[in-house]
Amino acid sequence: MENTKEIIDHISKLAHLEFSEDELKAITPQFSKILDYIDELSKIDLEGVEPMTHVLEVTNVMREDEVKESISVEDALKNAPKHNDIFFKVPKVFD
Image 1 (spheres, rainbow, N blue to C red):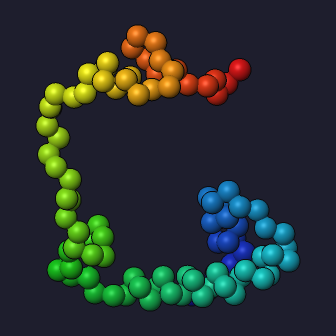
Image 2 (image 1 turned 180 degrees about the vertical axis):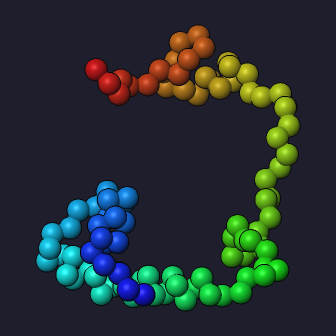
């Protein structure tokens, strides 16, 4: 695939990248190979191929989200080194 400096400039602006002239000379052949590969991929016939979300057939193993009774505030704070009536006390993070 033929690419020009304008194409690389356009894509680099979209990606918020800046290149010097030396860098442009170095990446132009590499960029050309990438675009050629993408062009080859676009020729693949994908008719009837279902889109994938993952390469492995993974199913969700988590339980259903059900409302259940949870631990009481007193039990939660029982082993806390520092707490008041209803909150854990932790060291300051911000001044």
